[in-house]
Image 1 (tube, rainbow, N blue to C red):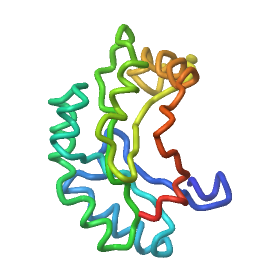
Image 2: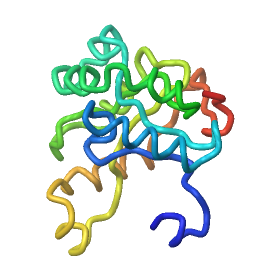
Image 3: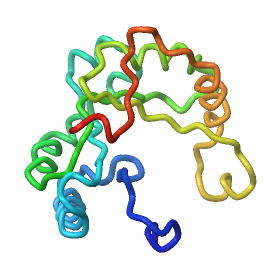
Amino acid sequence: AFEEALGRPPDFVDGHQHVHVLPGVRRAVLDGLARRYPAGSVYVRDPADRVSAIRARGVAVGKALVIAGLASGFRTAALRRELRVNRGFAGVAPFDPARDFAADLARFLVCPGPAHLVMCHPGFVDDELERLDPVVATRPVEHAAIAAFVPPSDLPLRRLSQLGV
């Protein structure tokens, strides 16, 4: 459906609520991607990260550790199929619009991996989105924080195609 709508294959694939890494789902997802796309052409999100990095960030630590545990082995399985994955993951946070997402965003960059990915959900809420997604209150908060974000000067920002992972 993506290819039909946009006229090209995806650059990046993930699953809502990390479902693509669940042990009962991951094999089907990874095998399907490996069959459909040339080696190294698709980037798949790995929501696992080092325990020490998750703890150092201090944001939704329990939730991030559970997700990382569920994703254990995902990176190896993806690489075995010649799919690219990130190395480092942050962005797990409580969906609380009262939180200071700008401060969380800065913490998501603590102990980054060599091909670090930060998950976020920025956006503008309308009636259609409210019908489709029960978690929308934080989207404008995240959008504002990202729009105002100034990356640290020592943060290497690269496009997916430059990561070589």
